[in-house]
Image (tube, one colour):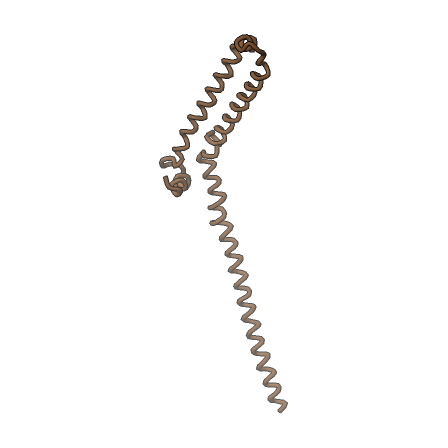
Length: 153
């Protein structure tokens, strides 16, 4: 995988092989984490706190509550992360990247840069013409002064 392949993939409308296909395997892993966490959560809820207390021979209510809260947070965060990366509006979704590319490259290079260059050329042209007029007038004025001096002599 080369970095330019990713740009080609998105520039040409995502019609070639996905340059980020190797990242898709992590989606499977994230879904596995979500599935295992959900099964663990359902298992602990199915067993119940009383049975866990009896099996451990002490009160584990606060520990189980903490673990269950942690598992819920993990499930929510991994689901959100998976959606942010792989979802229909995720970071790797073709339309997201093409929009970013269009805003960053095409609009900047093709529109803003051309506009800036035209202002630069216009400004430099103005200074060139104005400078030419100033030099011409200076030469004429010096010639006029020399002519006046020679007439006085």
